[in-house]
Image 1 (cartoon, rainbow, N blue to C red):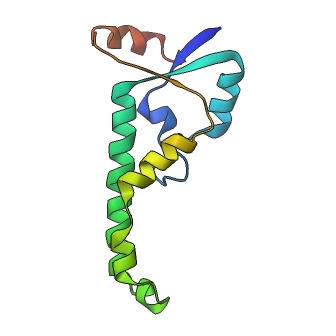
Image 2 (cartoon, rainbow, N blue to C red):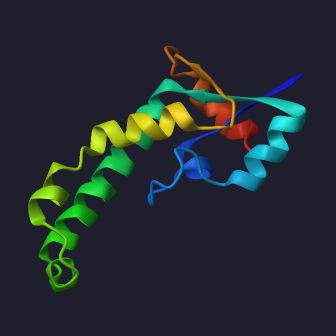
Length: 115
């Protein structure tokens, strides 16, 4: 089975509906190859999702609709973003393998081979 390495741009979902984005493409790749994601890409996904959710959380708290809809500010503030990201990772249905990238000299080769 072929192995395909994905980078952040191909799988990031800032909306945090799923841990991995680009579902149709990933599902198609999964039929014919093993999906590989470097550990630094996983870290970057977590950080970008976290940053986006914190921004949206702050915006929601400041938005007048949150209190017009009787949403308690304290409830919104208690929402645990890190736990939510872990939940997304654990519930991800796309199967992937995380690899530790220790030899960064391969990055140029990966770029050359990129689709």
